[in-house]
Length: 59
Image (cartoon, rainbow, N blue to C red; front, side):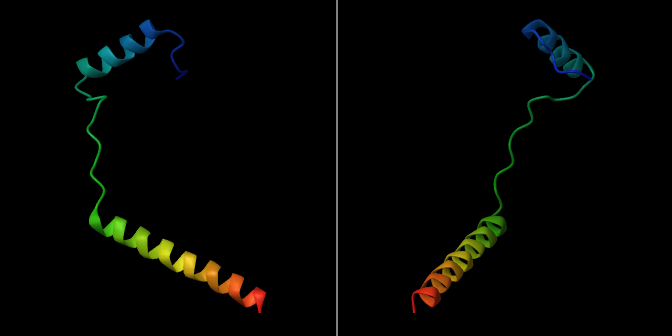
């Protein structure tokens, strides 16, 4: 299926989806605490790794 070229085509596709029972505007999920925690620890470890590499090369 090619992307719509005009706004009328896009509105027709949205109305067809609504008629078929598909919600084209689903609400966004809230980020989980576990995902935030994992990302935070990953970034901390990454920064420590970079700092240790810089310190190792400067000695």
